[in-house]
Image 1 (spheres, protein in one colour):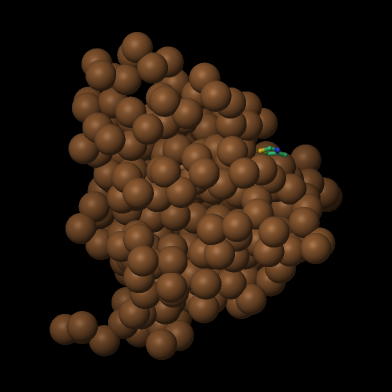
Image 2 (image 1 turned 60 degrees about the vertical axis):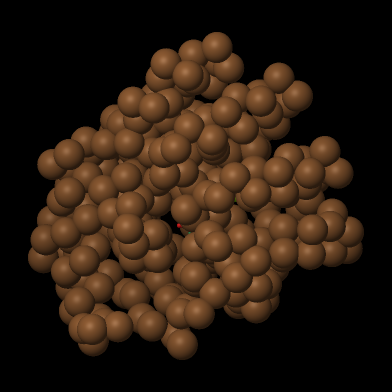
Length: 275
Ligand SMILES: Nc1ncnc2c1ncn2[C@@H]1O[C@H](COP(=O)(O)OP(=O)(O)OP(=O)(O)O)[C@@H](O)[C@H]1O
Ligand SMILES: Cc1ncsc1CCO
Ligand SMILES: [Mg+2]
């Protein structure tokens, strides 16, 4: 590392990448679950990106090569959609995987593993999803909660490192502290509020935001992912100052993503190098 990555450095990087998304409005194809489509598209728009929820297999050869990046999320996986996911992930665009509820079934685990082999730039999951993927098994937990996590993000840190080493992807584990690793370095992003877990698909939305950040910083997926997670968490923190519960937090989080300014980002982003 040539330059010391201080808290101030991360604040400036986060602001620079959010500004680049706003300036360049990257086109982000999202093959995402049915629950998440609305919040994913609105979070991307609020951040300055252009979302397109296009998943028809016959459209992918024309559409995906024109995108800046692709987000694939298996949350409401079906046999029909899996070939589209494979095709979009193979279209030579930077792409990001959300292994939502990876341990729900053998079919879903196999789908996630086949997608991992197509070299995503980043994989963002909650702790239970990353633990399941790293073990390549659906039997890792007796407290399985489907799309929700039954583990803390720190529980999945070693699994994240080994998954990063075996796949070559940057692995991001979300939670109270988001951990982001390329298998060597580990970065922690500690913005966010617990109430974000009470809004469905905030994880899916932050995976899409990571995709937009990767679109503008394809050569440094670790930095892109850490900055996107911190910015999304910060939008939750500021949004919570006006929210009464999950529904109003959802609205204020999206509004805050749209409004975040340089002073707020550079003074409040909390990213630190862990190792
Ligand atoms: N306890 C917490 N405190 C602060 N922020 C949190 C906490 N838990 C989650 N978050 C934040 O909430 C967002 C969603 O993360 P989460 O781990 O809940 O994803 P997920 O389980 O994949 O969600 P979903 O499947 O509903 O999309 C992330 O930005 C994360 O940083
Ligand atoms: C609730 C739910 N079920 C499948 S995907 C999803 C959205 C959060 O991952
Ligand atoms: Mg999820």
